[in-house]
Image (tube, rainbow over all chains, first blue to last red):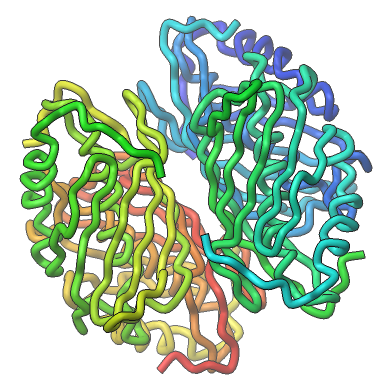
Length: 149
Length: 149
Length: 149
Length: 149
């Protein structure tokens, strides 16, 4: 993975404050596990009220934490005073989303002034066992001079 | 759009029972609005606890109703005694997900014995105004001889 | 499908001249079959030197004509003096790409000042029979004030 | 990246013979640069007759070598007597496809009995400089008991 430098020294505060405004994250019980330049991780404990028909985490929730992880990975590299929008993402659900908890990892593959491309991965974790349950790729848009709040 | 015949006369009951097992749908307040062979629609009223950082519906929730709509559109054409899995989907978020309510439409583009391809669309609706907020494409897998429950 | 108005009255000339600069299109024998605001079609006769291992049209060539059809569908709506770039696309290969000839259809789903979203479809045609061999979705970027040549 | 074992000891011959049947690869001048279990690389020298309108490699050709690299990465892990089909792929074009030559890398992310998920990357290479020009994700289908030829 490439190593990135944040151009805004206050990137972590900016990411954490924006994450706190995503009401969905609180609703489902997700929290930021890592905020680094170009890499953000979100943790979500399993809950029986977030499932699809077989009791696994619903693909929409898997996507929610993956999308937010990638979005904030990109946003960590954006300039102060900007906002982030997801243009699109693609996700493969590679295994049933089973686990005591889930970890979504968003990593910037290609930063850019207007567009930013991220890799997404979601792990299902039970004890010491980690299984990749989803992998994806995402395109973000940087709205310059449009503060996030 | 092509017109499809369901091979299982009990397709609608099968879809409705499986949808009822998706605990996430009840958690977010989504309901089935249409179940037809090869086409399923899911309605979701806006809720302030399901948003991203700007107060719009979170892309994960947009994806959740789109994925379920497409999944059940495919499942409506599958044989009795089968299950449906989402292999992958891709979604473009074409406008801020604003609206009093949202309607996710899943339509089968290409049925198949093992794989099924669907088109996804999510509308934001306020009064008489409907705006497309997301469009996507999805690949489903039919697990034959594996009942859904 | 929505009906679009081109903002540049010379859109058709602009599309045809840019298409003529795509040397790949001549190399594989593709030609423009339709240029309308927000919709472009490209036709390609089958050739035995463009195949994958089973003698069907290679997915890369299916993608090439789909990508160009979508790209020029978007470009037809862009302003004079602009260029078009493909940000990304996703394509499902829904049937073996068999046929005497192929028709790629690009249609704008969502125009925008910077980004434009298109739907892609490729048909395999033999006599009167048309089969959808691929469906896709594409994101384009409009480079304003950057002429195409 | 995970390390894989091929179940068919003749995997390399099987991949090379199938690649040789892809007439498109010879037409564009592509060759196999690496065949390993779960990883295949394809090299393509730049040619002025394979471009888009600005003289860069056309996205369809970038996709062609990426799709074949991923397809054969998956196929290397499939059993003897099977065939490979691409279900779908998604590709982001992250930089103009400039270079003296291009290297497409296909890597298996998740093998499976029926479906296999791969990561795709294409580099543009000039002298010692390597630039990622495309990244993608692909879903393959294994046709068991259906020899490739």
